[in-house]
Image 1 (cartoon, rainbow, N blue to C red):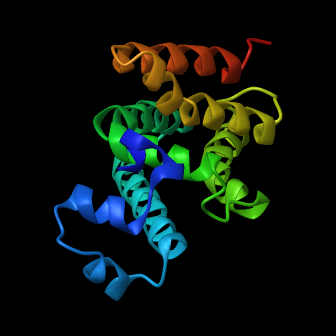
Image 2 (image 1 turned 60 degrees about the vertical axis):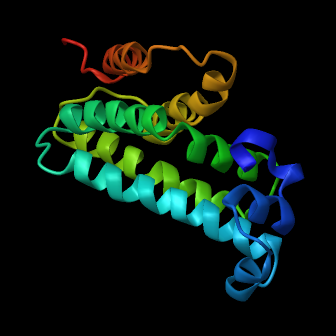
Length: 175
């Protein structure tokens, strides 16, 4: 409902109607209010992303392989879960979830760790891993918005382009 009609139009009655429920009682039995339902929805989507990405990164030995898997994995997830990701973006942009600097750091931290690992092993060159991780994360975070205006976007191509871009930005330059 949020993905199709927006965060502002979300209410227990509209959600119940959309879910085919005869009343809002079932929703209000489980959630004290709209804010609690919205937070649970956002956390569920974020948990799904986290679980999926953990699977994608498993077994990737090098930092470059992990970065490649991260970018392709998250873009693939967004592509195949467009409605939940669009709803998550709407919730976040409307301030419907406490998403503060600490939460943002938790999102960026896994990418930053991949970059730091690559620098430590000499696989990656010199750059600020916080800035690079932030840019990588923002490149994928914006995809649900881009898909709103370009629904036919080839997400596989998008992922390949991002991988190539960030490979060029992280590779160690020959001395």
